Length: 143
Image 1 (spheres, helix red, strand yellow):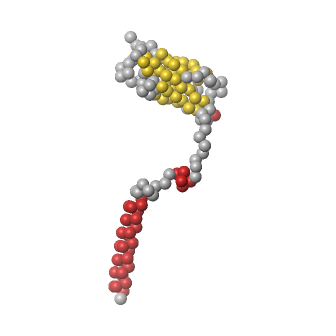
Image 2 (cartoon, rainbow, N blue to C red):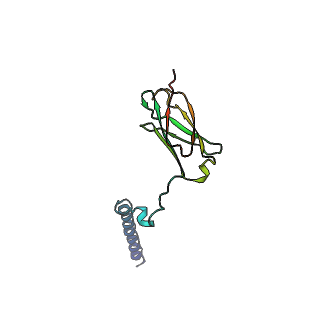
């Protein structure tokens, strides 16, 4: 009798293990089971406007320059940098108060870091003041 009960429990355990494994396989990877976070947790926070936005275009001899390194020189420990896109455009968005300069003045540094790939240009430093609008930087080629 004990032997029958043991094999019954063992068989039941194997069946349950197989069912749980199949269920986790089927329901764990099905796209119809995965819900977006807004469905599960409600809508997210409202998008907000940046406190400061610096943008511009970097131009060379033959038009916009892609892959040019643009950085903001800061006097605190946070440094910001980006690269120009295919159209030579760059953007910085500041969402927090601690990243904004008190006087609204920023020093932007432009540097060619890809060598001759997109043309060779001299580095340039530009001062930008809050509310000045987009920059258009014309680079000087290296002779």
